[in-house]
Image 1 (cartoon, rainbow, N blue to C red):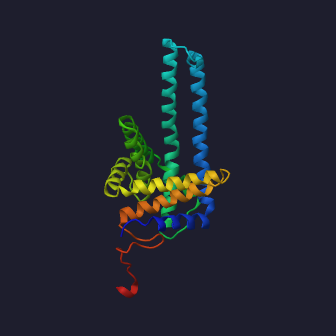
Image 2: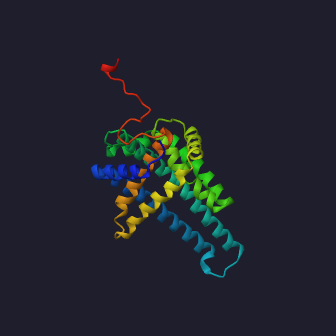
Image 3: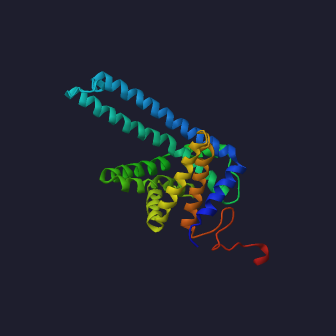
Length: 243
């Protein structure tokens, strides 16, 4: 059985509706961390450029060029720091979604479970980050397509993989096995952005819903089917009566 996007979206909506606290807290924490790093990065970059005269418009001196180069370098480094800070949180989020996919209910505390051992999530995301950056340098489109390696790697970690390198390898394998995930991810991304049209606050619903749906897409891709909240059709439940 292939990937059923409608079923995945239904899963995302049902889980958000039944457990909004988990999803909203994750979104606010993620957005807050990204915003904080962005603000700090912009401040440092502005100071460097002003100090070097790079903000003077027509200034083409070596000092101005160096300042501009350093400013872009700072932005890149701050992006890496943001990845390091957010990766364990996203890993914890997917662990919670995994619990819900299998019929349980995620707790807010589970969001922080990735920080107890952040190395695998950070390693997987950094490898993905550099591969995506390389793909973007070669051509923008490959970089966009490879952008799925980050969430796919963290999904594999949520499913029990303990090595960041192996999680990245499995993510790449999943993408090769089911390239249709790229299309579904674009659709989910559009749905996530639609929340901006509801006075902006709609993203509190649409982005968490899309991320939960993405995990369901991932599970259907690696499991070859199955239904959220139920075992895959390939799994045979063993009960006392059947023994």
